[in-house]
Each structure stands twice: as C-alpha cells, then as structure tokens.
Length: 310
Ligand code: FAD
Image 1 (cartoon, protein in one colour):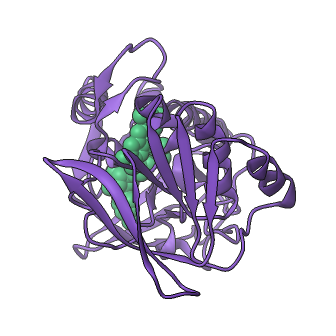
Image 2 (cartoon, helix red, strand yellow):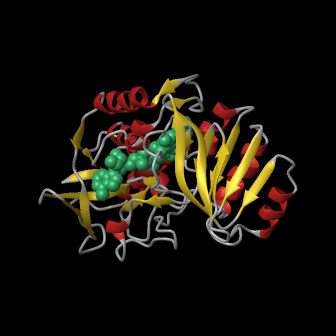
Image 3 (cartoon, rainbow, N blue to C red):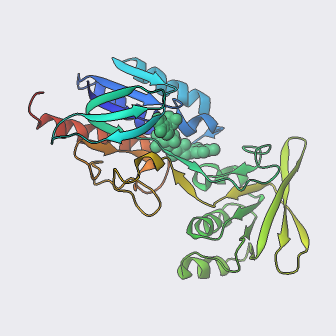
C-alpha cells in the first residue's frame, strides 16, 4: 500500500506529491488528466515569481517536478469510490474506473472543479478568444475594453464589480427576474457608472468574427425580443462545480459540494485530507491550490507520524 495516495493531478495534487515524496514515504498520484484545469488555460501571469507562462507549459512543469521524485504516477485513471478504513489508522481504499483498487494509509483528495458552461453556440469556439471564466485570471487582459458577465449570483456580481474597475464597460446578464447576489453587492454594483444590468435575459449566442468574440445575443424574456450587445469579452459566472460527486455520503461536503476541510486539510474522515478547488478553501487560483496541496501533504504526514506501524 501507499503511505500517501493523492487523487487528482492538478496544481494541488502535484504540490502534495512533491511534499510527500520529500518525506521519503511511498507516494502515489492517480489523475484523470495530469495538469488539471491548467491545461485549458492560455496565459498565466499571476503565479508569483513566474512572470508569464502558458497552461500547457505550466502543466508540463508540474509533471516534471513530480517526476524528479519517486512518485508512482497513474495518469488517465479516474477514481470512482472511496472506502474508509475499517479500523482507525487502517487502510483507505480508492476504487478506480478501470476496475482496479489502490490502498493507502493517507489519502489526499485534489480532484479540482469545473466551470459550468452556458451551453450556447460560440462558447466553445471563442473560449480563450474572448470567452473567459476567471476574472482574477483574465480580467486584466480586457483593460479598457467592453465585457459582459453572465450570471447575477454572488460570483457574477462580484466579478462585475471587480471588472468595472479595470475595463471600460460591464454588461451584466441575468436569466432570472432579479439579481440573486447579497444586497450589499447589488447596491454596490448599481452605484457604478460603467455598468448596465439586464435581468430576464436569456443568453442565446456568443458571436464573433475572424476567430475572436465580438458580442453576445440574448432574448428579453418579457418582451420576447432578440437583442445583441457588442463587446470584446464575456465572463461566464454561473457556477464552479467541484469534482466531488463520487464522494457524496462518504466525506462531508458543503451545500455546494465542496469537501469541508480544517486548517490542515483534514476532512471529516480520519486519514483523508483534501486540497485545492475541490475544497471549501476560498478563492480558486493556482497559487492557492499549490499552497493548499503542500499544506494537506504536511497535514497528512503529521497524522501518519502518530499512527502505529502497520
Ligand atoms: P484542478 O486543476 O481542477 O485539477 C484536478 C485534477 O483532478 C485533474 O488532474 C483532474 O483530471 C483530476 N480529477 C478530477 N476528478 C477525478 C477523479 N474522479 N479521479 C481522478 N482524478 C480526477 N488560476 C490562476 O491562478 N491563474 C490563471 O491565470 C488561471 N486561469 C484559468 C483559466 C481557465 C480557463 C480555468 C478553467 C482556470 C484558471 N485558473 C487560473 C484556475 C486554476 O486553474 C485552478 O484554480 C487550479 O487549477 C486548481 O487546481 P486543483 O489542483 O485544485 O484542481
């Protein structure tokens, strides 16, 4: 069995693997797609000490760093179930989609999250060519330009307020008849001079030309009229979904499906730790996920030190 088995090979999992391996313990990492969300990222400009890089390069660097150590990498492996240890301090089992099973004294869950898509024509085509999902990451790329934010919940309204300070103009598009964000955020948004809000607006298409986004179409759900807004960027903010469906009922999850962790990354199950976007740790960013992975690995090592030998 492994001393530490990491499930998920994004920034959080890679950092956990490096920290675990440096303790000289038997470490494994199983990932559906090594690199995680970073693979889908264009430019990364906010990983402090790396002025600028791109997603595939960053993902390759994560893998190269893990390979510097004795870590068993099991890429293209999806975990389907977690079976808690039968006795305190016993082995935790991870069942894989390929029928195999892995056992470990400690497990780190770092399966990340995925942005919910609007699912309209143009979204895939103009992804990273005007269609964005992360204001902290891509907001500065639209400095002085016109953007829209899709979604009037807390994350959408926060994004709109944030972007209004950077871009020329923000159009907020909400499907429902009112913004669902906290009143204090809605009031703040309404006080900004360069923001337009459309409620009852169903986004129908992201339009573009010459490989670049140039606007969005929506239907006014009250009048039935079709409208078009010209702009250079769209931020989709209709939810970040943690990849934790397979853990439901086994590990304590928040209402949003995030794995609930304490300050050391410990979950509700002894010996099972978690890190990164899949958890309740706020602000989903690479630098936060890597730090969190390191923390969970040290937390798990700390826990392991106190266990009797098998
Ligand atoms: P993830 O990167 O999501 O990795 C999860 C890992 O778990 C993957 O290996 C996945 O294959 C695996 N996995 C999932 N389910 C299972 C399973 N059941 N079994 C086995 N493996 C599984 N952040 C920044 O700081 N700067 C940026 O510029 C930036 N730009 C971004 C641009 C885009 C388009 C996107 C989508 C995100 C961006 N982010 C950016 C956010 C950043 O990528 C994430 O915060 C970060 O990748 C989270 O790391 P993670 O390791 O927690 O999860």
